[in-house]
Image (cartoon, rainbow, N blue to C red):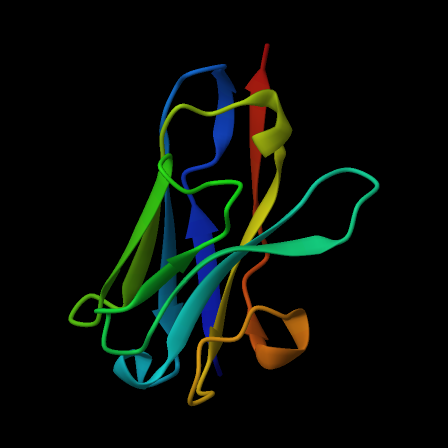
Length: 124
């Protein structure tokens, strides 16, 4: 049974940092691309960042470039999203997702496996 578990969310002030972690089990993690999506209240789920299965190629949405970074540790079956200089519009539930697609997808439908999400709230 595949399981993705996010952790590290919380309530912070503008300009603060948070590090989200996604722990995977039940799959050969080294063979999966991992992405982070977020869903703000009343909005759809949007792609934030992704890393390829071998961990060397990453992609960040323009809205988070220069502030967020991500990494993948295949030995530990974890993927981390480092979020710096947080803003109120980063407030959302953050989800990690995994896929074996040959390319790094940016749509929900590209990812068959999802975590339950972790809340990030940034106050002004």
